[in-house]
Image 1 (cartoon, rainbow, N blue to C red):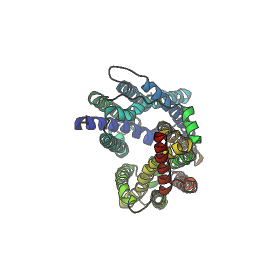
Image 2 (image 1 turned 120 degrees about the horizontal axis):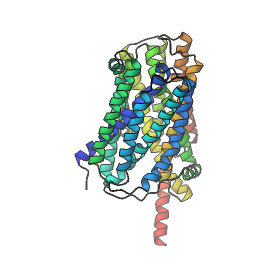
Image 3 (image 1 turned 180 degrees about the vertical axis):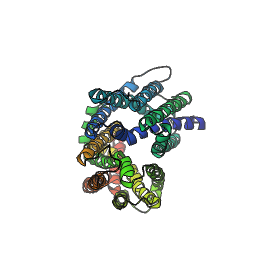
Image 4 (image 1 turned 45 degrees about the vertical axis):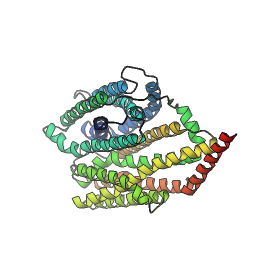
Length: 453
């Protein structure tokens, strides 16, 4: 039975709400804790790193818990609902810090709130994406609903990016702290409402019997597959570079460019370009192979970074030039992000050919783990880096040396990371399309031989 339009829209609504939450946390929480609450950036970086590592460890355990759940609502929707409600409460708590808290009590509060938010977000995020195979067996439907969900997630992520620095002063009537609290509350309520739409209208139709891999199984499968290891290391370096930029972007636009509101425009233009670049990949594949496109995507992103560095250095706030930088950067990001997933999929066939064991679920579970690891590295560098460059939360205008250091942190270090990622990948990734065809041919021959014998 095919999915109805109502089911597709309802599933996409869940992605809008949950990624609005992720956007306001990943893009603005460090800024809020640091500049609004006055907490040390180094402390924030260490806290965020520890929390991301805990999340990475929690992911496979959540998969196991979901797999063992049996209720009238199925095994996905109960956790989707529970996780959303708890995560929404924690989200509001992170931005509703009592004003009488200072010193150690303040640090304890924000640490507990952030770690609890990460844990509760995992409670709903893992079931949300894992339920796709359970709501339809039709491969075309699965592809369509995945595209819808990813597009809706992009829309949800873009809304806080575009609106936060514009609406927070309005909602708080000049009190930035109160403005963040109100805006977080609005997003938390929308988060719950959007998930309720998904839970009420999207139901499981098939039963899955896939066992969630343990962390031990993930690492064993990874180190037995040298090509998967190459892709995973590349993903860590590339995503750490990307997350370092996103963690510091609000600082860059507010203090270096001098107009925080432009951050929203930059994010909207960049997000739209990223989606467009993903849709153009099939057309580009008709002319170039994947390795060439991947290398070109990294070079394109670096070119955008260089333009952004020059705009910051020369204090140019020209909207057209900033939009051009966003288009260039996110066009490269979009292509590179899709291709790393494709490369990882290729390593599954290679691993089966090499070890005679197909570790599809294990390898792809590892992707979530390493993305969390990349995020942990990035936020640690961002937090410590802000203190190293002597960023002063009490100053509306930072010193020239601090602003230069900010550009180095947000732009130059990510450029080095992307260069390292592509050099490492080109040196170690050997699964050319001809090589993959050879592997698939040998696998088919082995299957025929086993069937005959």
